[in-house]
Image (spheres, rainbow over the protein chains, first blue to last red):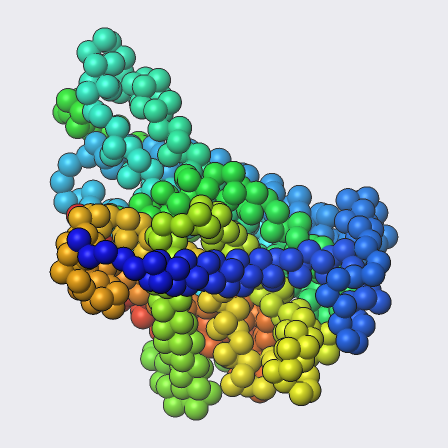
Amino acid sequence: MAVRTKAEKILKKVVLWSGFLLVTLIILAPFAWLFISSVASQADLLAKPLKFWPEHVDFSRYARIFSGDAGDETAYTFYRAMFNSARIALTVTVISLTAGSLAAYAFTRMQGNFKDKLLYLLIYTYMLPPIAIIIPMFLIMSKLGLLDTIYSLIIVYSSFITPFVVWLMRGFLATLPVELEEAAMVDGLTRMQAFFRVILPLAVPGLVATGIFAFLMAWDEFMYALIFTSSIDAKTISVAIAEFSGKNAVDYGMIAAGGVLAALPPVILALVFQKYIISGLTSGSVKG
Amino acid sequence: MSNFNRHEKKLPVLLLLPVALVVLGVVIYPLLYTFWLSLNNVDLTHPLDKGFVGLGNYLYLVKQDYFWGAVGRTFYFTVVSLILEITAGILLALLLNSEFAGRSILRVLVILPWALPTIVNGAMWRWIFNPEYGALNALLLKLGLINTYQSWLGKPFLALNMVILADAWKVTPLVAILLLAAMQAIPKDLYEACEVDGAGKWTVFREVILPYLKPTLLVVIVLRTMEAFKVFDIIYIMTRGGPANGTQVITYYAYQEAFSFLHLSKGAALSYLISLIILVLAVVYSRLLKSEL
């Protein structure tokens, strides 16, 4: 084996650690600036030259948002929009996990060509750009009187997140040994009993990972929310942020605070369930 | 026995019913409705001019310079994003795959931009690129790299490139995570064999790592092309298609036609053109996955 010289080893370390510093800086600096902007006073934010380290730290924007004071327009909109986003994302997660796991189980236990065709139909559904159906959906929702309600978003989000759940859960369920449910069925359980009592408990890690993806997708969606919702009864946090950042007199600090709050649930989920998410990402998009 | 037997014929149907309902009701019907709209003239600003126009809307669109401008910008967005994300993604994956103490910290960090909601990402970069109070101007001026504040999102072509950068910042970590998984599948003894042969770093990359990455790279390219082709959210939050239509990509154009100008049929025709391209890419994607099974 070729012997590495000391100089080469040092060079390698220098390259790796400079790469480390560069990547850390590029990733963390924008996050840091978003957070600093949310707690810096308006005067600091508009100062020239800009103060990267604010003189006056001020958490009042967060207090204003959480006070739920209806008179404070921007803060109250963020407050309500957070709850709308959470209700929508949680409901969609429950619906898509339930419908999706049942279908995924059927897919892993079915035979024949028909099942493959159906599966690809589902993938295309998931990949369909929102713009393809958003115009008629707008007309339909308007006829049903669902425009500007969270139900319109729950319905559409479920329609593209459920196929994704089927896709991911199928992968997880396929890894479970069929002997387990066969044994359960020999013991007298029906197939559905075997599914709920034997298979589902084993699939919990898969359900957790898939559920997080479903939640994140629903939390992140913007285009349908932009077009279907308009009042604080239904508006999501993304729509609220977009609306305020498009105004002429922009309260940058307040938008930053809203941004931090909108980012917190997905970022915390991603950090806590990092391993699940990485395995889900790779198995969901690269493997069949 | 693990497969459904004769007595269970109804069971798979029951299990698939909820999904089938959702897909048929919420996807197929609107999709046909969009097609119908695209063949008719439904313009909410001229509600009386209703009628069947066949391919009229499509023909009208392809005669517009405006349309080809949006198509060109969409291609530019897609190609530049891909080059940027793949190059940076490979480098980042190589770094994440190297054995050194910083690796575990980096592996946690890369998931953060991925988790950030798209709209928050766009709002954050719009604020950083702000011409008067933005952190980028202040930083570059401090470092002596610029003499005066620049209007990053104020010039059409520059704005398009800045939006691409903001988007790539969020997406590159995902590309790196996928490529890292492929790199981890490379057997260790392959590297050792290279060392015995005295192969250089570039040769190792080209001859050993790249062939292992190829299947994942193909999938990533198709997936990212699809995403880039339908880009909307980050354009909306950062530039609203401006300045001077400099960032007006095709989905934004369709959105404007349908929901700003209320030309529902032209919007529908545009969205059908977008969907056709996406469908072709989706078919390519499913073929890629199948060939790997």
